[in-house]
Image 1 (cartoon, helix red, strand yellow):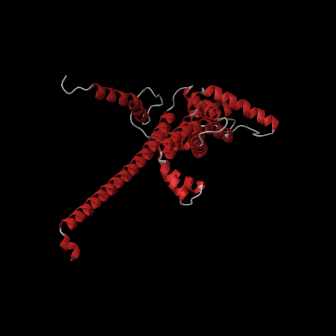
Image 2: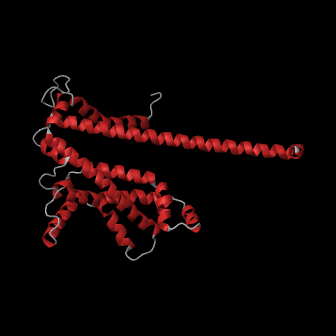
Image 3: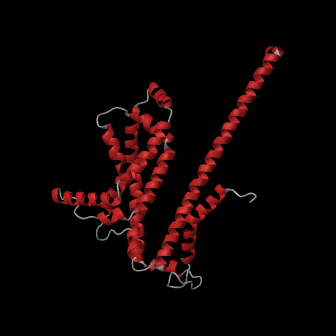
Amino acid sequence: MKGFKFSRFMLVVGLLFIYLPMLILVIYSFNASRLVTVWGGWSVSWYTGLLDNTQLISSVGRSLQIAACTAVSAVILGTLAAFVLTRVPHFKGRTLFGGMVTAPLVMPDVITGLSLLLLFVAMAQWIGWPQERGLMTIWIAHTTFCTAYVAVVVSSRLRELDLSIEEAAMDLGARPWKVFLLITIPMIAPSLAAGAMMSFALSLDDLVLASFVSGPGSTTLPMEVFSAVRLGVKPEINAVASLILLVVSTFTFIVWYFTRRSEQQKRKAIQLAIEESAAGGDLKRDSRRDPSQNTA
């Protein structure tokens, strides 16, 4: 068949496989029927009805709060762990430390959740904290496994950096902490942003860990959705999922727009510098060919 490309076909099939269910979910969020599988016409009643569903709205707020706190704490701990693994090549227990940092990547969530549950119960008996499981315990659990993802992302970026820039700054008298804050952090900023967004998404999507370490009054959105789906999918769930898709898509588009704009400005600056350098080279060659211009 003329113009047929297997790679293009597989790309279209893959995109449809990923995004077609999301599109169907958004369409059915405007379904007027209470039965999800029966189309009853277009309606926005389920979106307006979300304002009356205080339990679902509260779970969304908790999930966003936990996800934001997890993103910040995971980036801080993951960056420090990545810096130790990449910039401190030899220290006692390095292999053990590296294995402990990356262990949550391959550890089943059920085992991690059960281990954290037993840890919190033992701590409550020994030191009296935490007195009850809630948002704090969920945040600690999410930070535990999100830190591993951030450490891997930041470590790969740190290994690619040119150490001569940091060494030159220290040769000029800058202290290590100042080099880290003013030079290293800006150079690895894209990886930090990627780790933060990944941690936010993983925390917002987590169900297993939150089920183990949560308590009364700390139900997150995935737990609320899962408990509701067990009794049958409700139209309100489709509406909430559609709003989350809208927010995530808008945020992703904004990040993509500013990133592309920054790259275009960098390319223009590089092109302008090349043109100015070429123009300066032409002037020097012309002055060498015509010595009278120098005397004039």
